[in-house]
Length: 120
Image 1 (cartoon, rainbow, N blue to C red):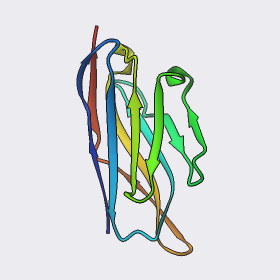
Image 2: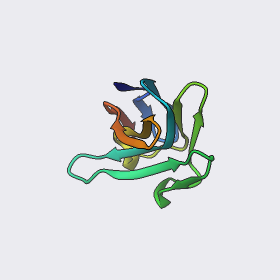
Image 3: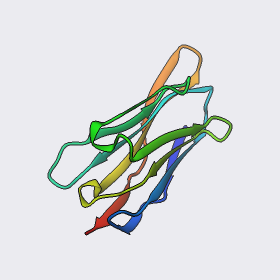
């Protein structure tokens, strides 16, 4: 059994910053890719940023230069540092982690979601 626990969301004014965290615990042999998605009201869930097991990253064009994804493998945790937040960043943010509970098996896990609201 694996659990993902997200934290760090909240209300911030435009131009402000927030840092999201997502910690994985439970039966973990190794962790592959870790990512953040978001879903705004009435819109589809979209990829915000992803970080591979080797540290390679990719970002949605809308957040490049403002958001930074990182991971702490010792803590099984992924972070999303969000700077220069804008009202259009308002959404529920979800972490997504590909976990190997044992060799030769990989499962896809989602966090519970954390609300980020940016006021103008």
